Image (cartoon, rainbow, N blue to C red; front, side):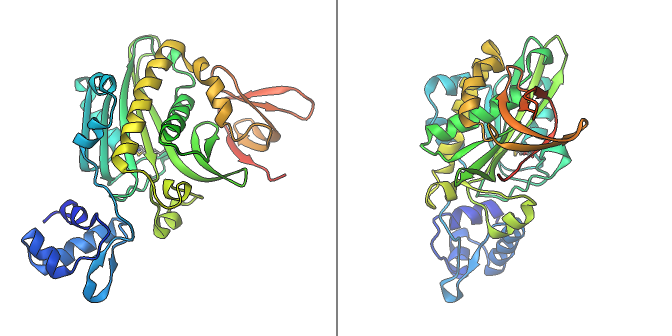
Length: 329
Ligand code: BTN
């Protein structure tokens, strides 16, 4: 028995006894117990309820390539180079990197769990199975890196468009591309992380591997391990996040359309949408980076994706790279 099979049996959210699970799976109770422990060690909060047996605190949907494809508009489904769902990968982005030239444009790979999920700045991206989404998409661009400034910000806009298509609001963007929940008008926990990795030539063919981790259900343990405030779609939807396959399809459809738009218009085509979601605009910011530490007021982003910061003397600085903190007024 594999952990995936056990998770699929528990997916309804109902209690199932060890004996019942063993009978359904055709294995011993000891084998069930072993796989319960494997899933728990991966961060799945399986509850033990005495004689009633084991259960998940909420129902979940296992990722299913057929269901994702069926939820995609036909032209989007046809435009994909590949669409794959894996139980476990080290990292969906690493998998696309390994495929190299063999991977077709607009190839999409999802995994239920990642053993070495990667975040920005070498951080780990915790990836327990069954709860969140881990997706990477390969997009090839003819004109090279030179034309890709602002791509990672555009992906933030694309994620918010996908959430909008699912009827979910209450989220915005913290420059450059952190997707945050908004609580009481203030930026709150991180809802999604985006990692864009480029390879190829500065002025020739190149490829972007776009990795997105979107939180649907965060457990208390995951909140603790995240090392920063985090939020999930469950919190934004009164504890009923949409079906994971629907969320995956919405993300893929938004990526397919948005990446085509980026190819034609560059980031300039996203500036207006970015402004709608910009959580830093008109806020007191503290910035730190190569230029030292200073304060200013968020004044939007320019057509390259640089952060604009109005200084006390009215002068507007363009920031390409910095850590940004919002100062409470
Ligand atoms: C961040 O640190 O904010 C970026 C996190 C990106 C995580 C996603 S999950 C899918 C893809 N695979 C990875 O290993 N990382 C990205």
